[in-house]
Image 1 (cartoon, rainbow, N blue to C red):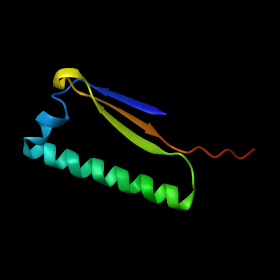
Image 2 (cartoon, helix red, strand yellow; image 1 turned 90 degrees about the horizontal axis):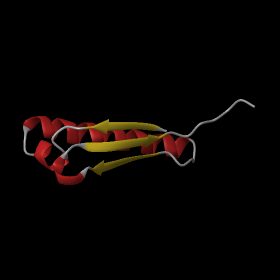
Image 3 (cartoon, rainbow, N blue to C red; image 1 turned 90 degrees about the vertical axis):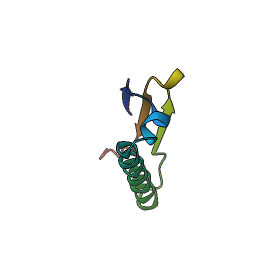
Image 4 (cartoon, helix red, strand yellow; image 1 turned 180 degrees about the horizontal axis):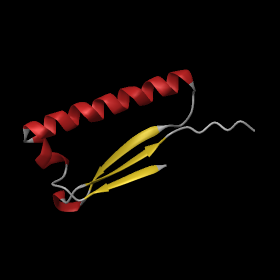
Length: 70
């Protein structure tokens, strides 16, 4: 589990700028990568993006499948 807690302007505000569009593309690419991982190794990996209250940033949780050798 990897958690990123961002105190920026939030998703809605960032989508109103050209930087927001770039972030949208990055998120889309991340989602597609997770789909590829799931196809190769059926596991419960996912990316959850939650807007904080009143546009005070976002919290992103990335869960990647872990395979141990033992």
